[in-house]
Image (cartoon, rainbow, N blue to C red; front, side, top):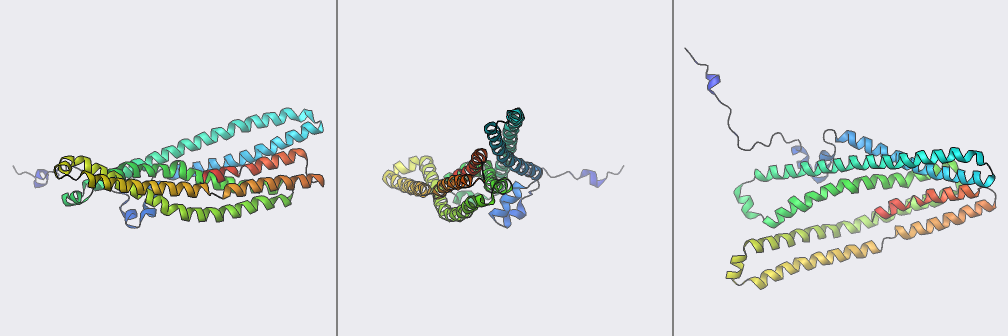
Length: 321
């Protein structure tokens, strides 16, 4: 009886098998391509489409709500009380639909953020397990722990709330302008257009300044964590060689650098100019609408609705700090 040699060949036993790596090509093309590969991986594309649709629809419903409020006030002042019931019903429906859409979109954003953090941490550990012993001997344990815990957690914050708020801010920046053009005198477009241009210019300048400071903040945090971890793990050697003062000085140097970067970021945020521009634009818009009211081009309800739509610009201003 002859045995088939193919049956005698057993599969090699692998102690650790990470499986196929879908991000290996993206890693070679830089951090941006790597993050995008994670964000748009698998069913995440469907989630992103639904999130963007919900955010745009929510911004439209908010603008329509202010318009209906203005029409309700105009009907009340004009004595058309028969229309008030219809307006109140529409406002009730809009008041429920808007928050429900925001809740659904934020749930999907949170799922997307948790997926990104999970996949990034899995990829990090998978690649870390594949490194040689000499690599682990050369790396600082504290810095690795800072990367695998705090830095990976920052990827979660990149999606929730950062990315969702960026999409919402630009939506709430441009959609109110469309409704002002459609429903109110064209002259009122001056204020939101001026704010949009000023906001984008000031935000670009702010982003260029805050980026290096944030980099210093994260870098010093990693060094501070690494120094503390190494000192505690080798505390017997430190005490035996009487190096307490040196290690203490090293730690406080990194801590002071972290504190300075934190203060610099606070000083820059305190000089955030879009808040001042928004106050000037709302005041100017109110004066402009009163002027048009005196010329008979607007009524009280339209003024209230216009100021409500203009107030939607507070959202992109406040969250972009």
